[in-house]
Image 1 (spheres, rainbow, N blue to C red):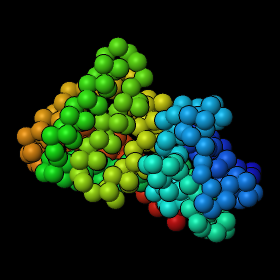
Image 2: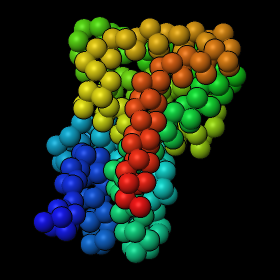
Image 3: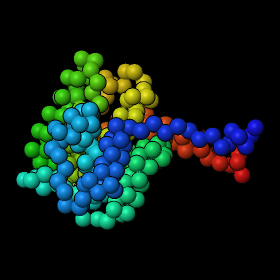
Image 4: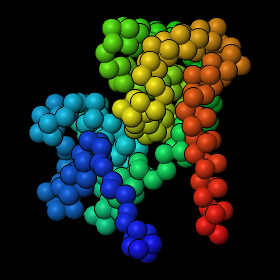
Amino acid sequence: MKSLIENITAIQVESPVDKIIGQLKQLIVSGQLKPGDRLPAERVLSERFGVGRSYIREAILKLEFYGLLRTNPQSGTYVAGLSINVIDNIISDIIKFNKDDFNALIEARYHLELNAVKLAAERRTEEDLESIKAAMIEYENKASSGGDAVEEDMVFHIKIAKATKNSVIESMILILVPDLIKNIVENKICGDNRAKTAIEEHRMIYAAIESQDMTKAEEAMAGHLDEIWQISKAGFAAQNIINKAEV
């Protein structure tokens, strides 16, 4: 009986973004999309996949980050000139990466965002401040009215990443943050009232960036992410106990 139980594996539920990436992979591998081909417009893809444009945008951003798509602001998004085998393997790794280790993803996000907010405080421009403040207000309006503010929360963090003036940090946050925020909110990992308690935390982060106080910016972001950071540490501790018991 024990060996039977050990052979049962958890069911993996695909996110909309993973499904979009998987279908694009099939189109490329089957030859329907070839290197150099232009993807349909975001609006068209949204209608065909039957999902919101934010999911399409997130999938494209991930594929761009890994070099599988390239975007020209004037003419659109194109399939990169990689071989089918390379594209097939990389896309499989992207989908696997999204699911593998929730605690590790939280840990990576925590340290990445702490560094990002310090750089944002140091390097932000007046235009960055306006963008971050607009995203903060959008979030507050949605969260205060009891609406689903997941997308607005993502935008707030992404605008901070943009203010770092570091394209690698910005791209890494674009990869990590959307899936994590959706997972945390949809599974109510931080409780039902988390959306409203985050309002004041966002304001503290913004105020520190505005005053260009790197220390306060880091402290404010650490406070904002503390709850999921504690969950991550507990997850690692529990896994360590399990690993020791199995030895």
